[in-house]
Image (tube, rainbow, N blue to C red; front, side, top):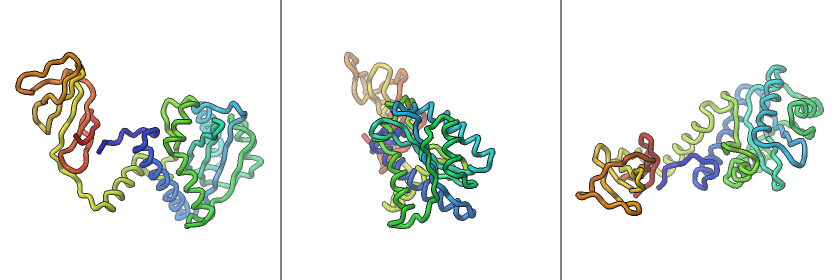
Length: 261
């Protein structure tokens, strides 16, 4: 079982991030309603067929966000980037704040750098079969490996299609992923694994070494042209390591990521 790499483009981590995004959407809407705030769904488009790069899109959103916050039309938000089949970027935003008519939103969006095509509507319901439930499913679907891969073609160095305000979901994506992990563990009735842990370390010479907690490194495999030291003991001149567990689940060690051997 591999430790998470945290990449949106990863098959395994991307799936978890999608579930975390769904949790953030559903919980954020519930929190907003509990505070007596109405949640609205805003769509912002690219200004042309050529579209915006990821950097340009977020620059435009920062401009628009600042303007709407000052006017009271934006309080908390959850934003996710959609990459269309044609490659254009759209930004979908769940937001609280005073209502802004669609015509005024279009003008403000265009002035910030988006296209003039913009939409705003209230989010009604999130139960099964409701329009809100479909919206939750659709938005969470944008936090996927396929969408992240398309974002890379639009100049995204960091494949991060989701942005939120701090109060939308306290702790952000990292906390949502932890909560998803806790729920999954509870469903599987998994108790915390105390170890013992094993660490697989790749040395600067290309050799792989394995060690347990507080134990010396032992050569696991040798790189090309590298002889195995006598007695199996070795030191790793440096490099990146992978941690593994002799127990049920791996855990991250200092400076290491890992996999079950």
